Image (cartoon, rainbow, N blue to C red):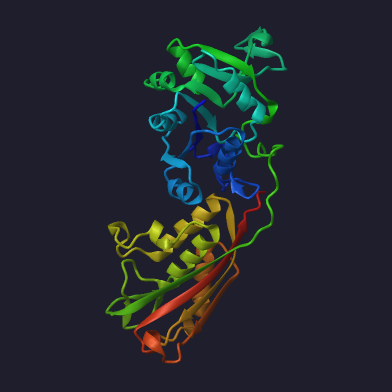
Length: 367
């Protein structure tokens, strides 16, 4: 049976109450969104997998996976609309990234029992007394609905063609008269909503990896321009020829951090042909990258910076540089070295400055 898998992963994770967004929790050294998609693809040979991502995460999702990554909407339903428009198979299985430990049996039961139904849904039976309003009702008539849900694609597309917001697929399909069937779900398929919910049976502990990256950048001098290195203004008659403020040191640090995380390079985030970054303050670019790493589950261990410059003399500025980079990266372990190029090549002939940076990061320990 040809089925497309849709993983909804575009939420802001506000209820999770953590610097690390829920979809970036690390499970067996994978971000949660990729762990869920890989796990379900191990269970069944889906024709295609579509993952919706927060606008700020789309680039990273595409770097880290070969799945079809789409920008999500402000609500679950808008994200699903974006995804469903690209589904070409007769059936679509929709799940939420927060439901991480769905057992294989649930997936296979959904597929085996779709029959002539428009949507088939896993559910749990409540074990406690159920009160609706002020009235105690028969708990045997109550179903606690889970995902994933398997639907006929055309029926779900029709059901979503509305301004009414539904919390799941089956509710939308039922509203247009679709036929819904239910199968027993699983307690293992608990949804991660609040901090602490992530203590689930399928979560394997992350190995205590240290990830290393290096960055290199070089800029030639430009007369009558302010020189900035490591976010500090340097007394000099020339600055750097560059699209931004030309802070060659911060640029190399950014590349080192992105490299350690496996997130590409500075040009992918701040291209030098984008007018948005014309004359940009490189400190702001570094702050963006540090926030990106922290929100996706990393913390910085240390950064080692080597500035290669025949001129100007940088020794008087090193302490101030170190303090600035420490503030920008939320890391105390910063080392800055300055050396000449022994009057060799363009740097030795006072035509520019080069910087090499090395960074080490690790998974952030959740408190």
